Image (cartoon, rainbow, N blue to C red; front, side):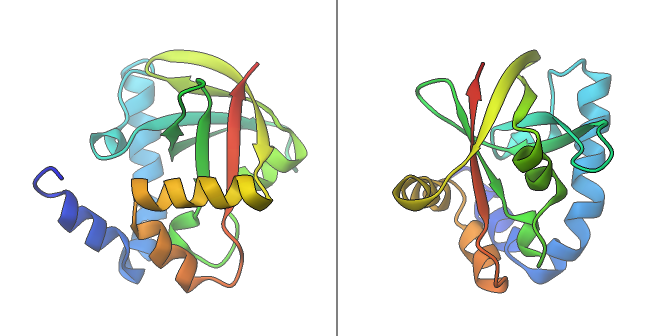
Length: 156
């Protein structure tokens, strides 16, 4: 584990982080992503990430959300709707449920994807992988009554 990662994991599992991070990190990531034409996300210094562009469930407008992701060997990505351990599902998960056709910016390239909500054994397997990838997800799940949504984003 790189120096500092243990501290980042510990801090990111706290309630204080859950209150502050959603108001700071996504905005910084979106701005940096725009400035670097999709090549850099601040959060990818610790975790792989994509910028998801999904159609708003209510507005019908494109919504861009920087997300940590688990790249898969088959070229798909697993994304976790943790919402930093806050009570409600993040809006982007509702957007994908209503409009599964989306796009991700991955390493400076735009990739059309179709989102699929994971359930049952497939979800359980992906959840174990997510916990191994980023242990603070366990703290997020422990704080909320809802089941954290997991999606597989498959290339179209």
